[in-house]
Length: 241
Image 1 (cartoon, rainbow, N blue to C red):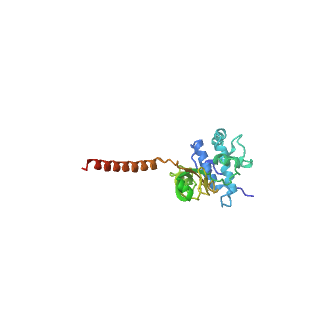
Image 2: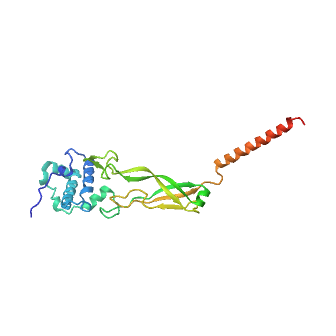
Image 3: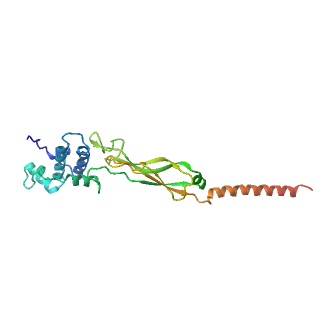
């Protein structure tokens, strides 16, 4: 069976021979998200991804890279990585921090918390209020890939995700109490690799009944009434009988 000619590892990753380890890692991370067989429609995805993992396995290790730079594919002690059982799942999971989720699987976004302050009347009767909060969103500029035209995306600094301010309209049902939580599905942070977004969890807080702003209004009205009464008394005293 015919086999594909082996390509230079630096060409596989699309990096110069002077690239440092961080550049090697970024290149693998970017290409792996596109070539992994679980998401790629390329019929040669499995072979291409194994080639990518093989290149990263060598160039990410200083000793193996040094031997490869000196001897190429025939380096003594380098071994034929194409014939080895390269732990691709471990490589990709470490780079994308997928934690305990299934290798290359989707990951649900995180729930986001916010606080909504209401008056007693608003909580009793129910209301509709806008809630301001911050959540992680997929970068629109690069569609979450972290790259634009083969270059790092300047909008998200190659992360593929951004933390942005948001406003969500929340329906507060009647007779809502202090400390009650309102959950808005899918209004939280974006999921990883197409996973479902998290929820927005809004905690209701009732303003104290002794609201200082109301107290100031009542005090001002009382002062005006007192001044009016005083003026009336003065007029009665001054006017001749």
